[in-house]
Length: 481
View 1 (cartoon, rainbow, N blue to C red):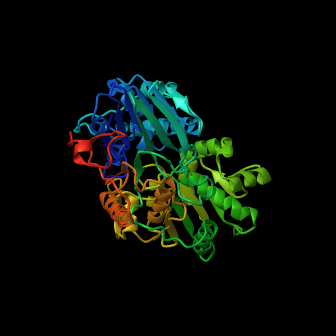
View 2: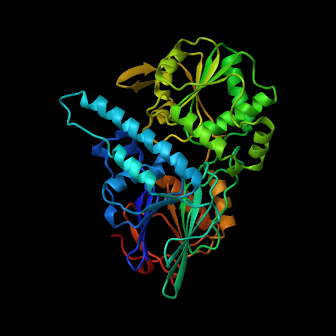
View 3: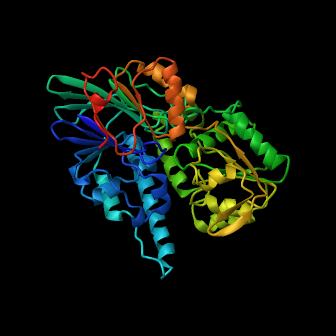
């Protein structure tokens, strides 16, 4: 059998890994948009698959985030006719995320096509492809063995990244040869407010692992409660200001709301401060989190039993329509606005940043990873002015960052995962879903600690896999295709 790395190779987004058995069966693990495509959302940014989609037999989806799921309808558009396997929460979350992506694409299409001088563009997939995609989903629960065919057994383990996120364990039998592969998907941070700690993929011959925070360390020393309370008091109590928090709709927003609810339940939130969630997608997916609360850690489940809700508290308002969102600009009392998208690329958060970037009484708190080139990344790097929709705005607001809500482990967390997984002497560990420098730092440190057979694949690189190979060698893995 062989594996081909078709996305998230030496970059963070666009996860897509193709496994081909000797009998010709093809399995795709994840089918995500890379960030450049996500910003284009046009046919010009259509997926250039490194394979024929019509030849794929099955897709396995680790979790719902668009950089892992966003090209599934495009795959169908180009001929994929198989099933899509994932956990039940992932199927529900993906439905909302893909539909939201389609709406964004359609909106961008209208804006770009107003300019008659430019070549007309269209979304990379349509509603019929989205609808067909959702009809193809087959759900499998954690730790339940599922036979794809006579050669492949699949088991999902808890990754802890977001609701329903899974690691993938594949036991593949070809003749007398049995090989076990593990795909971590995105690993969750240890000690998450909502999710259980990741369950490492053990006893695997080969591990394909994310490496987002390789060589980097989480800096926050305060608890999530102390961190949020600090910024709320500093921005909204010590001065009559507003705290604007860009947050991913799925995962980050729920962690922030749960933390605020915990503070409220302890009587620690200051009086007179209103809290607004301005993200229709976050609001919809928060209901899914509430529905699947049994998937969360013991602390969150007990909190739900005591309070009847994980996220609802007095002083919290959800903003659904555009008119109410625009009215927030004229709300002059101290407040906290949580809005998407987390990297400040698109979504309603751009409007809140635009409206408040010149307000010296405002703090913009970046609460997650921002890829290079995004507006969030430029803010974090201290640019004195920024451009939004072609217009320049000077930066007078305070720009702050916190990683206390990170949904990824840092360098030490990754080392902990690998140690618990027991892959020190595995046949091969492949690093994906990370910047090249992060992968190199992680690889160097692991080699110094005695780990063997560590590989950083290039985009499109293909490797042979077999139980019989003792280590990662050119003869075992062949040449790049």
